Image (cartoon, rainbow, N blue to C red):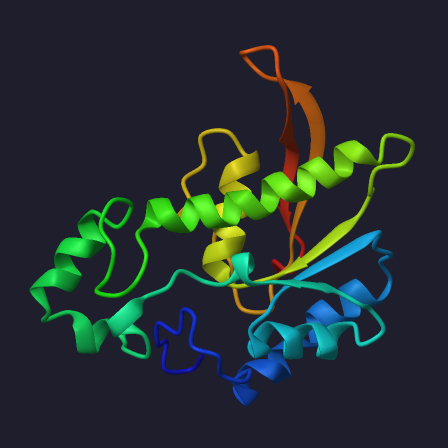
Length: 193
């Protein structure tokens, strides 16, 4: 959004100024085939998917929503910077929650539960697990998904631009405990210029 408001779970339509910036994503995704499509249930993601690939049917999932900013939703950093509780939360976002919002740890659990369910579904499809999956979501939830698969990557590290496409190439690997887990072989920003 142009004003850089913390929208979180607020269900607003896509900002028209950003809709125009989806042309690159539309062009790149037009040529791609997907075995499964998942999308946040909020209308800004639904509208994004409808713009870039109106031909795709998605499974809508509320676990792909952005972090819930609670009472701070709709505010900007500039508006909230004078709030001592907000400044304290910025330093300890993983353990603290905004008033009536969710902590970073709760956010991670929610998004990673989506990922775990997706992985379980892949494991059940032993003959032919999905080879190409499209996830249309918010910057924070995409960063949280990326941090699940890229070892040592903080959820704040990958830069996710509006309308950007991040491609993860995943492979099932044997973890330290001997259990199988999905991990990233590569991470690419397909819309980087």
